[in-house]
Image (cartoon, rainbow, N blue to C red; front, side, top):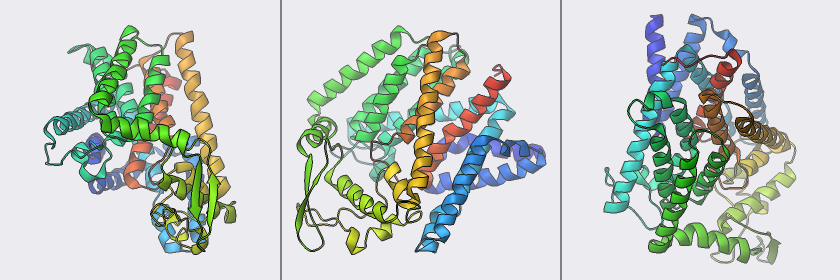
Length: 440
């Protein structure tokens, strides 16, 4: 029975990359089953020690904080929809940590599944680009290459958010890969193809994430040496090629961003009484709609600065007349949607300055920890596990980067992607502290 539970738990972990591309239902179902089996395994294998680490304690404090906020919010039921079961993501990254501790083979199996799924997503997207529809019949629309994600338009987000984990796992498993093909070819080819597709997806945030990944890869000293510079140059060249022959991608990613930075520094809005007013936003890099959301959020924050309005309540609070932001171009209420489309602004609006400070401190810690690790590769010898850890930190870093639009903080699908690297990072820390060698 014990072996069956362990194998079932491992299967759910290995199948996770597949469920992520099918949509929220299967990925959420996988998460629920994964957590249930994990809780059973904790007691079966007497691994309550997994709960005795600082990262778990920090996130438990965070969980109870947002839970309390929900109970004191204006709409308890709606707010609890986001906060009550948020602990499942805490259990999730601990479950990943548990599975990886059991055997390095589990890490390798996850890597194989991830690589196959990642390559399938890439092939499907290129097929859509050349034939105007993908394997599942989704059409290629102007600006937005979406691949098998169809109308969701998250191809760029998926590739950019999971790319650091994939690259780190390629490096970690390079000895095995080298038995079949030079790992550098796999590493750089994946980096190259992902960059093209992220650009063609038209997702500016994803393209910015990819740019960050490239910068850190260049800064990192490892055995790629000349190849990483060659492929970085190749990526830039091919993007310039697509910008010339497919100008609509250039218009969206480059021209729109440039115009917003230099031509939209002052916004004209109309209040609820029809009176015009100007809002100065220096060097605005987001759309008018995003800026309207942020202005609305700021107004809400002013009235709820300490504890916020409660998780998931932006969608209701922004409907209040005192917070409505009108834009004269189309007369619509652009400042009210399901969430503010920025992680830090959403956290500040819904959890107050306490939640905002908590998130900011984590980002600062991750940033300096990442720089310290990269600097360390130039000062002394390094292991494959240390390189993997750096790419895990890169993945967490881009997730926490504050100056870009983002999805809903409490979105199930996004949180699975957010928390995967954390489980791997815990295992990496464990390996480094115990000087564990790989044994595939």
